[in-house]
Length: 376
Image (cartoon, rainbow, N blue to C red; front, side):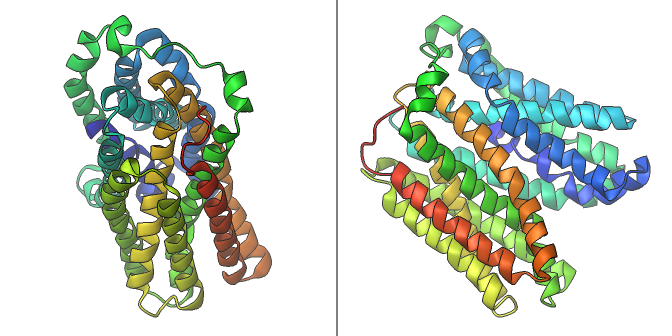
């Protein structure tokens, strides 16, 4: 739970502090946005490091390495100078990429008969960590400055590492700490299920990052006050926690996850539609529906990674492919959404495009969630 809590604060805590960071270091808006971009790119490109590391030192120790790297990256990022800022961001992004890939495999290794509940617990912690960081950074920066506020995420990572260290260090790679060998990526990439799970992971991530980047702006364009727009985004995040706690528990024990994937996509579409057609009419309702859909979607994507592979080594490899490719695809979403807004002069076309992406998410997710698919 603590490890999962650390998967998002280093990312979610940057945006609220950007004005202070840019003012202190004299950065342009593009340079400020590049801090998050560097981290997201690392999430997409460096995930394959996790299977290599896990094959050498075991999954438990890989998670410990990720936590320590994350703490180091956050501290470097908070040091003085632009080089430290971007270098620390890259190091933190690499650590999160390793941990992202490792978590589903750890669930498979340590709780093979309770994958659904464990997935629900750690994904809920992930979502809660992002929400807490977004809410806490500005007040904390007001008391101790942006460097100390941004660096505070290292304390959480070190705490998790301290608690996890006994488990990681007492488990030798040969006795339960190491996955049962590497899965050849060539065979993995030839398997149809790999790409169905990857597409579902990427498309649901894209629709989430689009709303994370643009939702407050859309509400403000419709006449909603800036403070209220921020609260509405927070409400969507809170609703995600409810979905991530419940959906994997039921879906993990079901023969087929197709109904769960379908309902999650439909809820997301309804949320997008509410923002499109009636943004100022019961916006709180649209945010609850959207949050439930998106929370269920990310939980199901991670659950399918664990369910569609037969052993921890296979889960680690599939997780690396799905999450790396998925985050590369997701990183394009906010940029494409903004470009559509710029070209169309409004938010109708981008939101309709978002609904279209949700339809593809539903199609690929339903295929990946069918009963007893060919395992990778």
